[in-house]
Amino acid sequence: MSNVSDKSSDQPGDSGLDFIREIVAESAASGNEIVTRFPPEPNGYLHIGHAKAICADFGIAGEFGGVCHLRMDDTNPAGESMEYVEAIKEDVRWLGFDWGDRFHYASDYFERMWELAVRLIELGKAYVCDLSPEEVRELRGTLNEPGRESPYRNRSVEENLDLFNRMRTGEFEDGSRTLRAKIDMASPNLNMRDPVMYRISRKAHYRLGTEWIVYPTYDWAHGLEDSFEGITFSLCDLDFENHRPLYDWFLEQLGVHHPRQIEFARLNLTHTVMSKRKLKELVDSGAVSGWDDPRLPTLRGLRGRGYTPEAIRAFCAKIGLTKVNSLTDAALLEHCLREDLNRRAPRAMAVLDPLKVVVENYPEGQVEELDAVNNPEDPSAGKRKVPFSRTLYIERADFMEEPPKKFFRLAPGREVRLRYAYLATCVDVVKDDAGEVVELRCVIDPESRGGTAPDGRKVKGTIHWVSADAAVDAEVRLYDRLFADERPDTSEGGLASKINPDSLKVLNGCKLEPSLGDADPDISYQFERLGYFKLDSKDSRPGAPVFNRAVPLRDTWAKMQSKK
RNA sequence: UGCCCGGUGGUGUAAUGGUAGCACGAAUGGUUCUGGCCCAUUUAGUCAAGGUUCGAGUCCUUGCCGGGCAGCCA
Image (cartoon, rainbow, N blue to C red; front, side, top):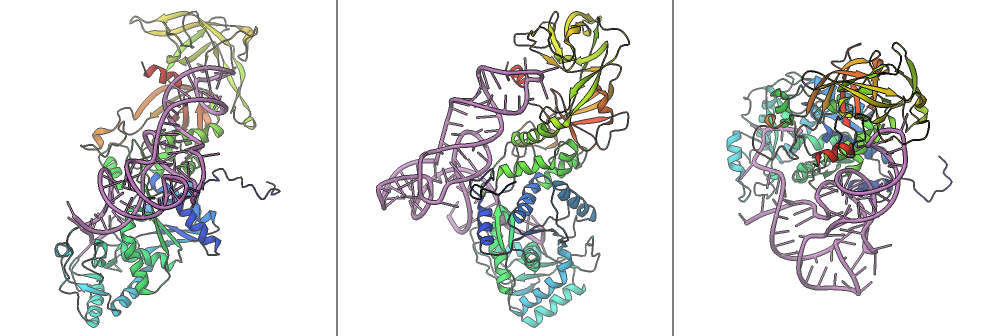
């Protein structure tokens, strides 16, 4: 890149930074460091909604010369585990982001948090409350009515300190006492009505075991985590908008480093569900094969299906960052994948629903190696050889005995191009007793080797094929949207029962061109005219490949058909 | 009947008081050894009413509509 012209920025989307980038840009312009963080709780797998947050947190830091921390927000032992920690790291790395040595556990801050809680008590801003959960709820008031103060609200500092220590040393039962911030029981923001800062729980923590039996709540812990790490911008979900006054209040009382929390809308996608609870429901009910089922919007699911990090990042860039609750069309995600893979995926020929073709004027036992282009979008991808022989397979859908208008493929008496091979004409149709077509007899024009008509005659249809002798047998799994319904979670009934019955079709006996026999398990291929496919990492075996379809190619023919 | 946030084509977004633009989708045509890609064209939008202003999607007021909040979850 030359930097001759300083004036013209060659940034593609030069127009308009999103509202968060604007704020950050301004801060960076005044010489401030930019530090962000991605703080998942290690109690589940990451999905594409998280990818949006990851791209925001890491992306923005990177763009403004800052850094982004990866932090496990493990303040509640229930459900957290090291397995999730590792899975999260793996997924973030796969997405293409690097936290360097800035990996943290909120649980490493428990002692420091404790000390600050003591300080807040000393300041008279927190108290130990003996109310049960039910009583706390009772006294909190409602959306319309103010709450009432806890009878324990005005204990002395000494008594609070004593009780707080005894909470930690195990004198009290789980749930019997809490530490609460002393704020305002009449606040119109319910989060400010003396929120709980610590609860007692003897559930073992996956890292700390039983070292602690009091655990900080999110509201108390999160701002401190951010503060300890010197975070400057704490980006989060719209859900936490109502919590920001509390986030600010704690840090203000303590007089510690005070990051700025900014909330943005989380991602919603059509034809799927995104919440941990709903995904879990699908997994637990056995409706899908696991958290890495290729139909799920989990990062692991998408990865196994053949989605690339580049496509997901491009998608996240396109949907933007706003405060509007929106529902993004899954078609946009699919578009991003096609756009990426069209540029990069090696092409190959595969016949999913084979129909046998015998080329009558091609000698038995003869084999030719024909040149095929690996990627017309990328000349540097080169060429490969594809064997041609007397017996072939073509796609059953590429033949029709009584073709309708606009059908450009094979039919009795009709000529098509066998891609990269010959022009072939169907001269006979062989049927079984049931009348089903079981074989086609064709003749080729020997002068058309390579696929070019010697006399320049127009051949409208080009179809893919695989030599029968050389074909590799494979299983192919066709995935479609998990739900036919755009918003599956808004209608009544269990999710599992609403799964799109066509979301998975397993095809056996598919015929692949030989080069696919040693396909690279890490990349997606374009099966010409069909879609993008990737080897299944779990079930594929040498000699018995299993391919997953990430996304079909756009198919205007199918679209025309379905409109009838 | 509390508090917070938000309303720009079907969808996702841009326009920071000055020509409402981009992308996806859809439709039509062109091109083509992938009915892919690519190219061209079309479709369609500022929630409403007042106000400020030479000028309002943008600022103000009111209304309407939508979302969120009463875990010792995050």
